[in-house]
Amino acid sequence: MKKILLSIVFLMTVSLSMAQNTEKENLKKTEEAAKVAADKPNGWVKKGTFTFLANQATFNNWLAGGQSNISGNVGLNYDFNYKSGDWNWDNRLFAAYGLTKIKDQEMQKSDDRLEFNSLLGKKASGYWFYSAFFNFKTQLDSGFDLGSGIKTSHFFSPAFFQFGPGMMWKKSDNLKVNIAPATSKLIIVHPHFTTFGSSFGVAQGDNTRFEFGAAVNGYYKFNLMENVTVENILNLYSNYLEDPQNVDIDYTLNIAMKINKSLSTNFAFQTIYDDNAFRGFQTRQIIGLGVNYGF
Image (cartoon, rainbow, N blue to C red):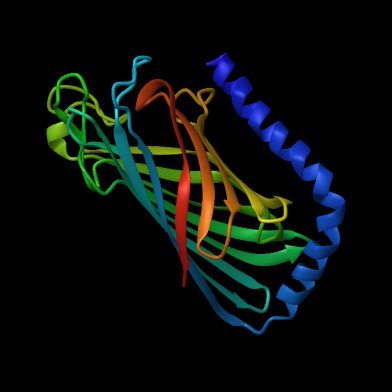
């Protein structure tokens, strides 16, 4: 666990170090962009991106060994934000699904996420806002234990809900932190997953689990260089009611290297620590050539 935590700190430190190299150049642009944003008329601003990411490897009589495989991931990001005077309402819908096929093996799921985030803020002073946030996470398809083949999850099982009031520090749409010291969390699973034991923290025989604690959510996106963007997303949660020292961690690093309007090379790294679901870190890493469509 210490090694993983050090790795997260290292990745965030590297990101911040790289950002410092271009911070002076981008500071003026950021301030100008913030001024332009402040002058924008009230109302809705909507934008979305659809991405298809592909990887493929072929081995034929390759003495060094290797298995032919092909994988594909599709992703959807849709932002719809509203502004009215001192009020800001930021919403993001995110969905991702991926499949991998290794020669002579069954098709396997490599990514499966559906998430909605909503953050409401009313300006208090300077960069500070009174805030309220809502987060919903689940998956689209069934999950199976690789060893036994037993189904362990499916759509809306598990489903995670978080919501609570707090304070938000927001310098721009690309740099903000929300602190919510009174956050409610609800976990829902289908009863058949808790028949013989607990599942995702839900006790045996139950289908819901309620928690109350503190949440910290951070977002930082910057341009490392021309056509290269780095996005950091960090979510922390501590349950006051049980083992508050065991902080849930969800950190995502996305790097996009734009080739042209429609093509980019994408790298994604995510690590999750939630001792109610798994006693250790869950990690995923994806890299490949992406086809992008903005709308």
